Length: 212
Image: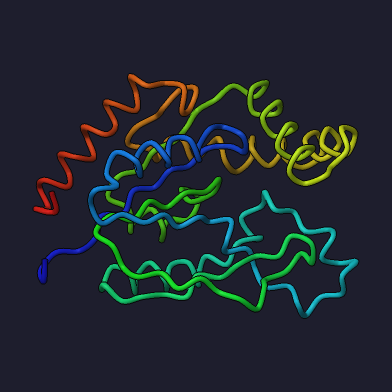
């Protein structure tokens, strides 16, 4: 393993597309091996320097919301088999938490996020780039269920955010990144045939790198 680098698998797609299901499928398939997940959501920018009222205006679906510099720095450390302290984002305060999560390096790194394919620097670090392509009606229903159940949002606030922020940001920034994907998975985690094909492809890459 001394001359090998970890494999980075990027899983992109819109909010509610099923990225997490796909990521879980990959993780579960290779869980007997050295595998980890890095979520782009953990790398929202620190906003402690801003008043709380300003933080409330944050557009979490815009590329500028992410601290990709820190994410890239951490990925580069993991590629050298060095540990990182993964940041934690506090959504109640709309800024980064003081706590971090210690992450030991692994042979397989699954990088998940809506805009991981938007930054060329991130794309260049990935061995395999996936895009989970799910119809807008399914994505909004999934997001609505999640935000109302898990985040205490109202139906009206979810719809308002979707129409004014999520949908335009998806069309402007997320959907165009599909062209960078090596594999496109329709309907996310429900597409078992596509996931099986994808797992086979990943296995081939890992075998070439002598990790399996």
